[in-house]
Image (cartoon, rainbow, N blue to C red; front, side, top):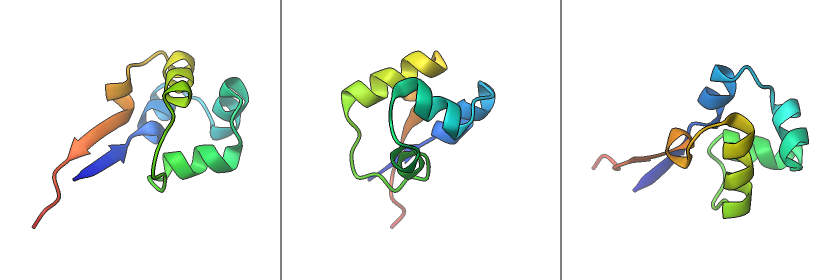
Length: 70
């Protein structure tokens, strides 16, 4: 099982930089970069809510489930 974070795709569609988004949702750039680069082990619903609000999108626009290849 793999959850892919497509945050960079949504940020590009909305023409928003990491700096802008981090400032708007009150998260450190380091933590946002971890999430954006698929290195995060978890994400809080409050953070996901803030991201969706800032990018005017749905959680499914950011998170994608992909089955592992065996």
